[in-house]
Image (cartoon, rainbow, N blue to C red; front, side, top):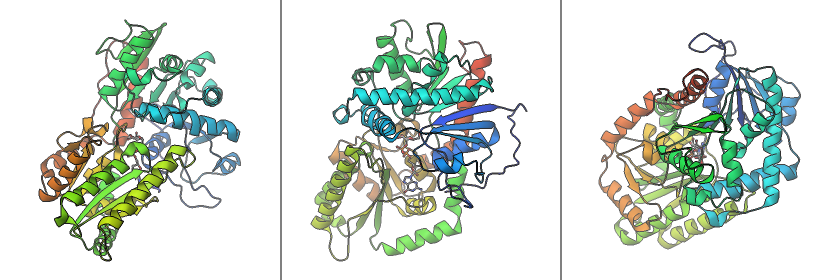
Length: 493
Ligand code: GDG
């Protein structure tokens, strides 16, 4: 989705008037749908925030190429709507798979989301993860040679080792890392065979950002236990290790608030939601929106719905639950399993309670355009956002911005968003009967969250994803200038 047509003539200056050099590094290409002569590029939620930052600065974006777009970018063809450099780094398929499907998504992802039983431990995957991180670092080092003042901003768990390699290559630029997933407790983290290497590498960054204070404190504890007892006492935000300081802070990610509010107001969105509403005859609508991932708790949520219909026969034929689940990481075995499990559960609930005039669960197993997603948010009486663990969860914030006033958000207490959004209806996603009760409660008490919603919407207006990116980058800049022991001031929700 092209969020707004970027202006190529925008001047690349920061608030102080100085041109800023930036190197953004991520696993994914920020743009998709690149075709010769195509009029628009496709940019997703978080990427669009970083894309805007890149547009405003003298930026280069380095990423691990999954082959899509590679030839196009390498051909030197101008990418419409982009005024920064794109640098894809390509790997043999075997290496890419071991790095992406293997170490990143079959070990770090499940472990950091508290699923040790889903972890695949493979020395070969680790070797390839290192190879990719090292190669990415070499590419960055080449670029940084000509840009010694550029800030380098690494995104997420795929590239945790990059700063370590960059330091070994003699790169002296300021380097930041933002982790989009939870940082687990020490007892979980210590399960990782390469825990020491990963932690030491993370201490090569100048700034490491997490979504929540809990993740910061989990990280500190792992540093104390694995690197040095005295290094990171509770409450410290700067870890001094072998002559290098690493600043660690929470930067709760936010959403593109104005963009969502505009869509929420748009005539075309209202038309979509009117059409949708007319198609569903039942008085109540519940909604779930997730990537199809075992961490999102979709199967547990469906169990709660099953129990709800069992315990409350008067709602049979009255409530339709729509689950949108975007296909994800289909080459990883666990994702196939969860897909089958969810499909079976949907069929079972529909078979058990549904009839010719009513389907209790509508399962949409594909991505829908963002505007349509907002129209789903608008028609729902409640959303069940109940991940078993989640770094933050952006859908929760998006729903609050576009739901009708009387609708409610049932939110997992194990999502990072729970720390950022107090006052909602929180559930333990493993507690099926509590979730079933909560569904009944929000249906029977419409409007119970209207006051708290207003305050969250105000919060999201003051602190959107652009502010999040500015906060991170300005702190990275301040580290360059300020006394290492002072904590720079920043704005949060
Ligand atoms: C990771 C962390 C953290 C979903 N369905 C459709 C669609 N979406 C969009 C949502 C939202 C995004 O995808 C999903 O973001 P989440 O935050 O919910 O989850 P992850 O993908 O797991 O993201 C997470 C995040 O990084 C940011 O740091 O919050 O904890 O796991 O924006 O709206 N978008 C469209 N169609 C869909 O069908 N267009």
